[in-house]
Length: 391
Image (tube, rainbow, N blue to C red):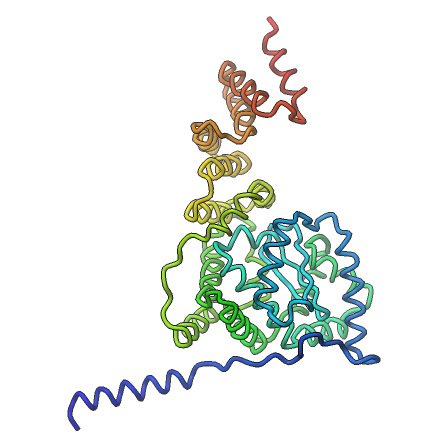
């Protein structure tokens, strides 16, 4: 046989094997509008979830801002398609990266997800994954496992705690995470079905593996003492392998990935709520993770004033050797445009006070009061200024 024909035959043979090795996307296991059969244990689980949902509706951590709810709810409906009316979305103020789905269609999304993804497509990846779990009835078997291993009271407290992130003795937390872990087969099914649902909604299926790559990068760079893997990594193991499978499947099914422009609508949502989101992230004291996120946000176009301010916050709160200087320089960088966050001036005032530079401290405290005339700590700052004026 001619060498060119031999090469072509080998190429076609290898390509056929590669295509044959691609995983099959499963079909949904329940129809839209599905309700459990009365009297079955599944109905009991639904009723328990309704109790959880009632608690969640009254949680002080529930984000009620219409911009965030409409944005995320719109993506959920777009990806869920005919299942849109079966899913109820609750945004929970928690800086961790997590989303979960209950058997009755109750979805919780933690606000930490918004600081980690870079686009609507990447956000839709995680939401689509959870919707796929729901349509495959994975959450039914998951919560049956919880019910079989825990008393009803434990289930209730753990369910609410898992939804909000507020709880829980460490041992109970670990037991819950173990109980809520899907099997490897279920995770692969949700990955692939979620990716297909995204593509059908005209969203980029290549975002599915990009999200995993972002989370892998963050965890690899999380070097702070006591920093733990993200919740998603404790409940979704073998992340690098899943990223590879999704990468190969997306390219084989939809063709090569293309360069992704900055998602302006997502950037607007992130920027519009940046202070709330990053205040919560700073409060985690996970400074290496915060550094990764600030670099990521700078890369997609978040206002440099905000980036510099939160670098200052990160260094100030970390308080390691040399951090006072780094914090000062970051705060100063955030003030050069004249659009500074008012607290940048206040914190510069404290830094200069500690350094013994009273004139610089007074100047920045005055600027703070000018920028934030209704500040809650105005009386304290005014007292400081009057005290410094005394002989």
